[in-house]
Image (cartoon, rainbow, N blue to C red; front, side, top):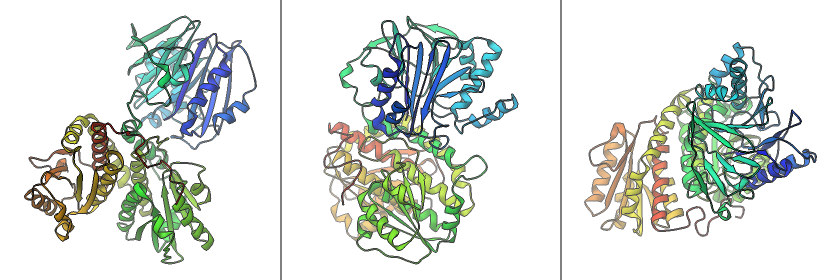
Length: 590
């Protein structure tokens, strides 16, 4: 979700690093920085802002031996200059840029504190830098220190590293993309080929567990202490418009980023002991007579779960479609908190709602993925999703982030930690689905020629059905509807024809039997019934199941199934998946 660039050798470092960062600036990152070594000294510059801000802050210079740069979308720590990359170790032996999430950084940080280390940022990246330094002071060898450090890190990382004692460019990689570009008199390193395509068309794709060193003349790569011979590939540099990290589409990439996004959310809003929400916000929600959600599209369907979370606290709550409420507003009481949910923070219908509320002097909470957006700036309170830029028009990981954030927020209001406790099992469940996505592809091959399809569920499973039916419409252009199981016999069952696909969600023991009976009625009328169930409620003949997660969070594995099904149906139809017809990413008109 961030951009890494590095180079070593004969380069115009200012132009190479800043131009490379600018090519990734479409992502909308919140900070940027660079470091380069010249005449034996490492010069560091970073800003809270865009690459243009960094460019203005970096004075013209020439020469240099090695350089690294980074654009950041905040995960650990607020987006400010201190938390921007590159980071350095306590004694400034190492400078590092990092993509990924270090899951055990807190325990490592405590260990380093016992070794006398003092920390200056809230990031997990600073922990990596200090670990490298701690190991280097014992081993006196950079590569051995990198290998030792990799052995204790849990999570994902792609790192470009400068050691103050030499002019080489070091790197290490696990579960986050990193690529070497081979040049003449210089070599390059980046999280995507895009910043390097003006310099070379020869690349090495690094694999998990690999680390090494670049000099102006060569690339040395190791795994578990053994040197390996890399595979060099040529690429058509004309096609690099975006950073796809090797994925064929942004939608697929973003579906599969969801587990990491959820992990980052937990890290940003819970420190292991307490929630990190603004206490004024928590008090406002506790004191409110009612919590009203305003949203559109996918964000509205996420808000339906927010309503359920609040109701489970005994709090009155409703959700309204923003474009409707803007014209037919209701004000339950002066002690109502309005929650505006928008991925972009620029949704015109919600801006209209917000203007009405501002005029009335009523408090609003903005939940958005875009810091500095209109809704975020004007809200009384704001919470960021930390999902990174979502390029595909269809929302995937941002929906996941919205639901998880609403669950965490409701838990904080209620003084509970059940949502936090459920995140690990949720992440495991989603990762299991990623590994078995070809099973969903096989289902998509059965239904992609259909004219109509239906999703059916009860309770929170119906909320999942609503979002999944929207995805199928958006991406595959299949007419899809969602219904509560008990409503089928009150009219919609008349739409069932032979071979009509019906996807049923079963995750709630309270309604599982009733929902299966509803689906049997549809099957007897010729429908192709496909049941998606939690492992605990799985029965023979179910089409797909997923590892169990706590109640309500079960919506998210079901929705990931629906995202994949929509994706693969569109793939079979050879449709423009990332940019479906008639749709835009940010709806800025009414």
